[in-house]
Image (cartoon, rainbow, N blue to C red; front, side, top):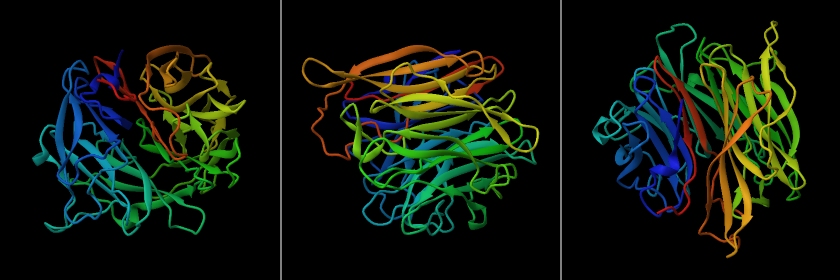
Length: 434
């Protein structure tokens, strides 16, 4: 096993957030990272990604993602973005356009992350690009995952989850669009289905996340609902898990089209009442899930309020033999009770990893200090051992506005197992690093 720390990939003094990291299963030495630059990226021209061909030892900044033709509001973007590899080494990415105006999702792919000319959008005409979000014009947090097709084992399907804020007046729909074995990716309207109704109360986001079962093509969708619609803390939320076993055509778990309840908890989040470390409003970055590729167990991590800040906890869900899942006991992942942004991955040998951040308070000069942790379990999530990957102090004080979001909505931990390598890829945060 080796661990790749995305902090090592920084090549400037720009503040970056929401890193997405992927390891090529066809060649685990190839690793790609996208991230949300504080000052915006260069989608007026060509957006960049970080790329390594030596397992994360060295990195190059590649201008690799061209502007999608005919798509509005690309200037200053892309905004939210996530990437994943297919089994044949194709790199897929989904991207959010930026406000003001319409905010939509567009997805594409490349076989060479070093060349913008290799990038492929779905272009019905030379001046138009298919939108993954179809006609929806107020979307958020696209989350892309590649999984094998449930019927044709050799085929890869590309899933993109996103939130539709205009679905109702007060409650957004969490939706998942699917491109089934298509090149370039193709997301027809018929392959776009709701998986639940997420939270949007006082700045609390549903935080839709996807988790694949590579054994059989099953896909899981995790999200939260609830919130008190006030700025008070903590907020009451319900963490829910839904499932598709037919390539995203239908979503149901335990005969419920909204899935099952994993946990009902109080957590500290929302853009008016809670700022992690004094510098990052937490708007839905409190949960994540992954599937054990050996036996199909589902591991869900989430944040629970303890005296005004969050502790990272986990539940293991196992097959109940009757078409649903048994929800296991709650286990502490972090010893710290001031922790956020969990991301879960499981290796082929069953090792469970959880990446998360903790606040360490302010230094003598009044600047916040944080640590990135990797907790690992060798007993199916019953107990964890913790490693501090890096501790760093920001160059940003705590006097920012309520919606200041130094770390954004997520960070990523990815696992890949090949014949010769088991690897965890850590997409961590780099704040004003030289």
